[in-house]
Image (cartoon, rainbow over all chains, first blue to last red; front, side, top):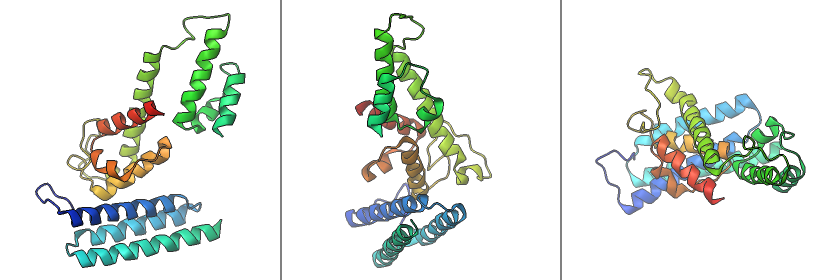
Length: 85
Length: 146
């Protein structure tokens, strides 16, 4: 659901897209706080790869499912970072 | 931490603050410490014009520094470095149209900028920052508000 030049999103799609970008940002921020360099790069690459693979989804339900998965991964990441500190 | 640096700069004579201390500070702290340094210059007996920075000079220096940092971050972004067509990163190059990045990359670049400048950019402003020039303007506005 990329906003190309000619596609206009309706409000729900717009809010959903905003949520996806916010989740991406939160995961990236959590990744940046990882001390171990190789692990951090691995997580960043995995995140990017996952998000980019699902970039072309157009059905709302599919997007919501991926978004929920992303949020769960974020929680797991945050707990494992907190445990490592 | 801000209080300590402010106190330290208020007491210290200009030139005793090391470059490493300054580079570790966030811009907000730098603003306050600069104010303290200027105040000392005004109060000291040896008031020479060379050591006194006018406000407009300060602003110009800040702009150049901010532009440099922003352009460096974008240039070092791996998708831009590895782009086979090697596009030129200038102030006016649109991130999406000229450099071939997408909104996910835009988010990543803005996160790196937040880290560099120590300032939290709200989500609603992400879509507005499409060229380095806009980013520099935005950051300067925020720095001026601080």
